[in-house]
Image 1 (cartoon, rainbow, N blue to C red):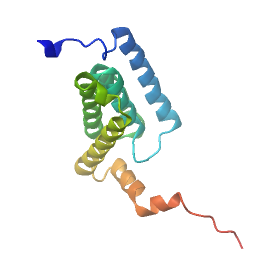
Image 2: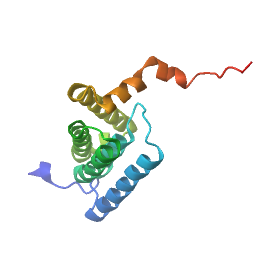
Image 3: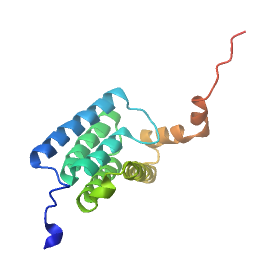
Image 4: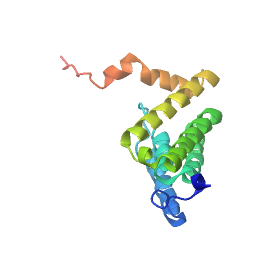
Length: 158
């Protein structure tokens, strides 16, 4: 069974996985406290996908559980939509880490994985909880007026 042999050049040791887990948990917490804005990419999804791509599926699973807890407990987001997207992002990143380590190292892989998981999360929220606070907030952040807010020029008071 050569396909299940551990390639020493691409997998982290248990100690390194533990360190990566700690780093990504702290990263998720810091992003939640410091950034936590409604943008195109969600910072919790970025942390989970990066954990999968860098440290494997088990680390991504642990970071995903923590990030899901943060999203549900602090922001009241729907558990099913958030947990599904976190699980998918972490597992897809972890599978790329295991089976295609060279592909997992490319920055565009992380970007497109995060973008896909963010779109999955938004789709699940719109489909299963269309009248929730999270869905209404996403619709507001995707409106054309929201895009104009960043380029508005204040008019002088007369």
